[in-house]
Length: 183
Length: 346
Image: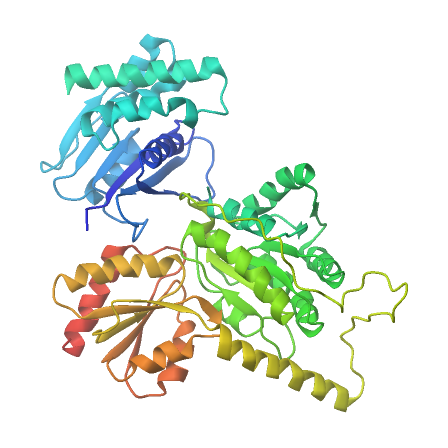
């Protein structure tokens, strides 16, 4: 049985971490994979922490839950503090260095850093920070092929206005470019 | 789709025409889904003033022969118990969904399986049972909604779908089921009696003889359901010495843990009850000879454990592992399995 890939997205409420997981899930689904998206739900408040876990597999997904995901996309400092120890050995950690003012302590992890908020500001699309990091993450890890994701972009954002679609696509591509040049 | 949306869509595809409820986390998306859908496709969504009102609307709706449902979570399901007892006695079909959270009291909103006793022992006052289905995937949330209405109509009995909060909140792809177009006749329904004798739906029996007769009738029906409708899924059970019993999403987590410990040579297998009532006793019975130990894994303090013990009847040990308010993960379960296996020399 092929390995199930489990990715954790974590950050502040409002940073769009649940949406990142949903985008990846939909992209994977459209390429014929099995997926499960599990949000942390609780008495969450604005500015509180949010996270979701995405499982992608070729075959039926056994458990959509895990304590030790193979990859984590970390959007803020509290999430790094909370999840650094839990990532699987030799896993991948993607970090938004704009909001994480320390380096990860573990030396077995593959660390990919990116000042996402600065880049988003430069792009003039601060709300697109999540899509920027997602683009970079997908380009680098190939969890889902970027070309495939782009192909299904309009399907995934079907209920959004044309302008929003465009902004998200632009943010996503900015991340893809960043990964190609820096990672 | 979210699990909550899938169970709602499944109900619609089963021909459910009325939803009566009162919102509560983590079940509220079911009501939201119905509120969005019914105005467009024809059906009644009604947010009642309380859980008690909602379940009595279900009682009334079901009495007219229409497929109706409600949904809630732990504390809300408790409030509905009076109505559920009445509906069970009146032998009316309906669907009750419990997207369960931890208790007792208001408890928390985290996932749990601690309503097992309440669901499988009837829940309200009096001698009765309802059928309880425990899905393990978002697909099954949809599938079981349809199965639930079929069973409910066939046996004139309330059917409950009970799922951990996680299953209601998580998303998975779903293959939509076809709309149900064939329904059983309900000559007992109160549909207006022009041209026929009136149908009366009532739960009051003032003479002891009639009450006893009624209960005997209900229990002969329950015996038939037990014989024909007990369902379970098994996984790597043939040579299993450590037999884990788990239901709902928990069973999937256990599957992964079993694959993990099998790699280390531990002969573990799974029985996943799909109907919690009737409890799939035969599956346990068949395994007693080969099992060295049963292990019940639940998100509560040990409830299904008692049903397993009743069947095993002391022939082999029955152990328990449980958490409250958290879905244990595969790594944690695997550790427990290894611990038990080592202790029992498996």
